[in-house]
Image (tube, rainbow, N blue to C red):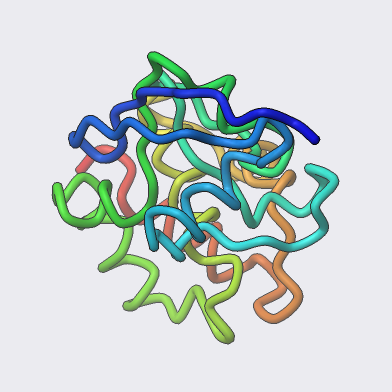
Length: 155
């Protein structure tokens, strides 16, 4: 039997200390322990991107990172980025361009889009497509998502 490890991380601005089983993935910890269900569990292999969160300013796959690895880290989820209004322009653009249908991929798409815009001021459509290519969407065909991201460039 594995022994729980105490870990302290800052999640969406709040310091959290918990005893965590070493095998628990970050996305499972966020969803089950903290009730932050905006990051979804899809493939559990890091392929679909549904579990995307930001750790120390970089987007990561929450299903590929163990929660205990986040000890001492700052973790931001879609809930935190939405509450802080960081994603307001993108959320509005996704709504205006109908860049979501079922909504399952939307939180991770927004996080990937925001990551791109933080690192590149004027990405091309090809660069947008490349950056979100690690996030699967089965509903939209990506055109509206790319249009939405493109619409906020330079604003």
